Each structure stands twice: as C-alpha cells, then as structure tokens.
Length: 406
Image (cartoon, rainbow, N blue to C red; front, side, top):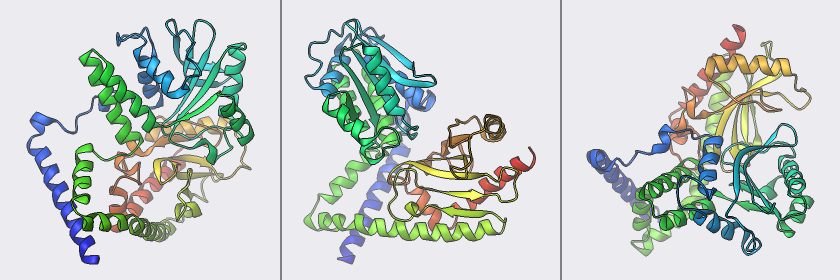
C-alpha cells in the first residue's frame, strides 16, 4: 500500500507540474491567473456591493428581476411566492440599532424585508444577528421578513451572535436562514446561464471564481480536474487516495507542534512570550490562534495576535488584541493603537477585542498564500523548512519597535 500511495502522489505531482508549465507557456493566450477582482475592492463591502447589484431588479445588469427571482426561490422556497418584487429597493449598509449596519437590505413595495448579513471572513460581533433580527422585524411592521446569514460558519456552532433558542425559533417561523458560499456559487452559476448579456455573464463568472478561491479556498478547477481524473483512473488509485486525508491531518498536527516549538524558542531570544491556543493543535475551531506578549511594553495589556476566523485553519488575520476580557475598552487607547498600527502597517479595523486588525493578505512577511491553511501548501512548506517562525518573529519585532517609538 505504501508503494501505491507513493506512485499516486508522484503521478499527481507530475501532472500538476505539467499543467502549470503549460499555463506558463500559453499565458499570453489563456491568462489562467487573470481575474478582474484582483483590481477591484474585494473586502466584505465590495463583495456585498456585487451581490446587491445582481439582486437589484432595476440594476444596470439589465436582466430585470431574473436574478432576484431565482435567489428568493433558492433561499425562501415557496414562502415568498406571493411577494411582488418588481419594485424592490436594494440598499447597502442599512443602519440598524445604533452603530450596527446590515450589509444588504431588500425592502419590497408592500413592506416585506430581507436582510443579508455577509460574513466571508470576519467573525460575528456580540449579539449581532439577534440585534439584526429585532430591527428587521420591527421595520417590517407585521409584514413578512427574513434574515439571511451568508457565511461558511455554521451559526449553530456558537451562541455569541444569537442564542440557540432564538435562532431555532426564527428558523421554525421561516425568519432566519443560513446560506453558505457554495450555495451562493450555485446561484451565480444559474445567473450566468440565464443572463442574455455577455458582459454580465463574464462578470458573474469572475465573481464566482473569486468566491471559490478566496472564500471557499478551492483549487483551480483545471488542477482539481487533473487530480480527480488521476484518482478515478483505477481502483488502486481511489483506494490510496481515500487513505491520504487521515494521514494528512496527522502530518499537519505534527507540523503545528514543530511550528509551536520553533516559534517559542525564537521568541524567547527577544524576551517575547508565546501564548498558544490548544485548539490550534487539534480541533482547529473558529478563532483558533496564538498570541505574542511584549511583557515590557507600555501596551502590556495587549497581545500581538494571529487568529483564524473560520474553522479548519481558514481565514487568518492578525493584529493587536486585548490580553483578556478583564481589559475594558478605552476609546482613547483603542484609537491610539489603531493610529499607531495603521501608520506602520496600513489601515485596519477595530472591535471590542481588537484595537487594530487586518487580513494577512497585505502583511509583508506573510501575504495571501498564508490566509487559508486548509487549502494552501505554502504555510506547511514554510513550517517544514523552519521559515514560518522566522516570519512571525520579524512581524513581532516590527510591532515592538513601533510600540517603543510611539
């Protein structure tokens, strides 16, 4: 069996290498790595704008209610069959309950409302979905309403944003739906087939491609097909392939332990302290991560933190977080840290826990290849070569220097 698995891996390596070489040779004609979304705003707000524009029956896509009709049928089944959607108003960042903002807000002429909370990367805020549900219900004034949670994070895994009892009650009453990005891609593919305008079809295809790779962490479709065809080529290949995932998880656990020990040793030379979440070692739940403490800093109540927004080591972001919940948010301190970090590392968001945070995509030591560890080999290769710890230490040293010079 070992020889069979070895031959399978060698075959996959050869075929993928051949495909990538062909893409290089014919890149002038195929442009396989070109995506228009590399040049557009691709944060949460940018993605919401793209989705909202397709849902708008009066949008510039010119397809009328076609896309919205199909979306409602997918999400709402037959519950909204009598709703007149011809004069639907679609808005972004609808203010709700003070500082809260609902990403996409659909209000129909007869008063029905659909609110969409778009969560491609970031985690939920405390009571966020609960507050949204209360606001939409009140704004609907007795008419039909629905809150759609667009995310790959199963809301049943946490009660931080909405408690279980209320969530189940809203699901039962058809007022709450969880819709993930795989389902969104299916809707987009349907929109592509139905659109009569070529430019709109191209846009939707590129949007779906972006979601597959940057949110779902899927392989390039050509590479995926190569691997799939090799696996299905024989019973021996299929048997070998089915044994690999278990071994891969064990190998990743060993590599994470190697990374932990390597990073701990290198941080100690700088008198930094590593705080490692146990969920980083095995369970890989949402918000798993590790922190670095600067015990001699004037910001000793805060950590440099690296954390995954989704389970499975997916969606890595970094920033400055409070050390524990005993540290209460102080607006002046939060603003000072945000200003300091933004000046040194680029603008970042802030929350109750994080005075400043940012996706690793733009980190000079890491970059987009380090965002989704569940689908990308780069982080694991760096760990195996003892390089990732060095990258993290350099980030820590830069942050400490910024703090000292503040």
